[in-house]
Image (tube, rainbow, N blue to C red; front, side, top):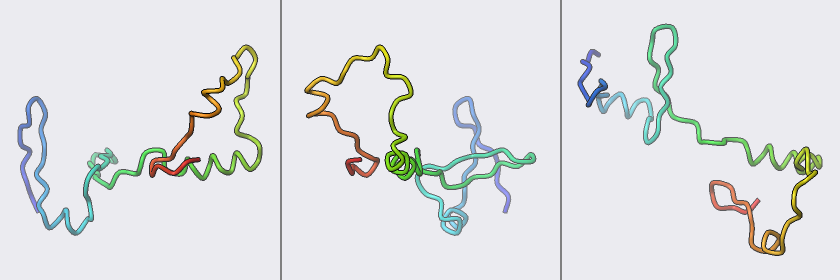
Length: 93
């Protein structure tokens, strides 16, 4: 299937025909990669993929503390009662 580059502001783009979009399963955010003089489009990996599992593993091994606490202030009462960390789905970690 052939198509032409189209001008989009100071850039150029390509219209991807609907059948190719449907067959590839692309939607939302995609990644463009230049590989051996070819432009490859693929579904974008979620940001920070795998971080929750890695952090849980670190916590289980007690390896989730900052390397150097010297000179830092202790947590305030507000830090201890109001601050929480959540993953991308809103689940507290």
